[in-house]
Structures are given as structure tokens and as C-alpha cells.
Amino acid sequence: MSLGRVLVIDDEAQMHRFLKPALESAGYEVERADTAAQGLRLAGGRAPDAVLLDLGLPDMDGQEVLQRLRAFSEVPVLVLSARDREAEKIAALDGGADDYLEKPFSVGELLARLRACLRRRLAQQGSPPVYSVGTLSVDLLKHEVRVADAPVALSRREFDLLAMLARNPGRVMTHRQLLTGVWGPAHVEDVQYLRVYIGQLRQKLADAADLIMTEPGIGYRLKEG
Image (cartoon, rainbow, N blue to C red; front, side):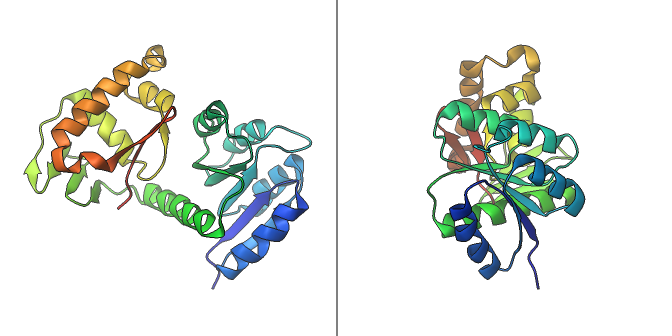
């Protein structure tokens, strides 16, 4: 039984030779695209369950591919790239990528990231009202937060920030995404403001504070359950 269809958009034949058997042995069907144009056609026509996208394509920059893909699809996208600049990672995540993996990478890490992307998308489709991991519970409908079953009093902004992370467990949320989602587009540069609120949240969450993980220079992610 297939775990789903994965579209690999990469211009390196060696990468396809590496990824195809790794993905198939893990239970996935694999579609291959060597160019951005081919990848976008397959994404639109075959409706893959996930996309592995290289940023360095010959006919179009991967960031633009991501932008065009997001115009018609919410398919999970795991970006694969040799580019290690923080700005590239941030741009990809802000552009709608679900995660980012630098080349070279191990098969184990790739499969783990892919499984996480697929789990998050399924959870989002089901819209679970309660996020729970370890001792932390966040009820998104009742606006209630508990740690070890004890209620935690949060301000509206603190709850909105935690709720945004809880709706995307395991996913890196960039500074820009969090600031725009909680405070609005006028505050996209107020990174220090965000750090203060994250510090306050961690202090109030006490023993569950380490569930909010920092991605240096990029943003934050909430540990998956």
C-alpha cells in the first residue's frame, strides 16, 4: 500500500538516482521532474501528496516555483537546496514551504521531515481543536492553556502567539509570519518585540517552556506531539 505520491523537482540526475529508491523503499510512489515547468505541470495535473523542491533549477528559480505552486495548491513542500544562507531559508518558509533541508542530507532525516510534513497537513485538514504534547495542552476553541493540568493565564497576544505555533506543530514559523499573524503587517520588523513575548510565554509555561524551540535567525517551532 502506497503512503502517497511524492513529486521530486530537481535538475540533478544524481539526486533523482538517490531519492527514487529511498522513497520507494519507504513506501512512496515517485514522480520525477527535471525542470520547473515540468514540475508545475505535474503538480497541477497529478495532485501529488508532497513535493520535494530544489531551489537551483535551470529554467526558473525555486522561490518563484514555490510562489506559483502556492497560487493553486496547498500540497506540503519540503525544500531541498545546497544554499545555506539564512535569507534563502526564510524566503522559502515565508513563501509557503513547510520545511527546509540542506544538501547533503541523510535518507533518515529526509524521510522523517517528509513524514512530519504529511502529518501536519492531515492535522490541519482535520482542524484539531486541542494541541497536546507532554504536559502542555492548548485548547484553540476555548482559549485555554494548561501545563500539567494546571491553568496558565496568558494575555491575548501571548495566547494568539502560542495558538499560531500550536496550529503548525513541528513547522518552523518565521519571525515575519508570526509578527504578521499576531500583530499585523506593520510590525514585520519588530523581531525584538517578538523575542520579548516568546520569553514571557516560556516563563509562564514553566516546565513546558522547552517545547518552544528557537531556529536561530529564522523563527520558532513548537514541538510535535
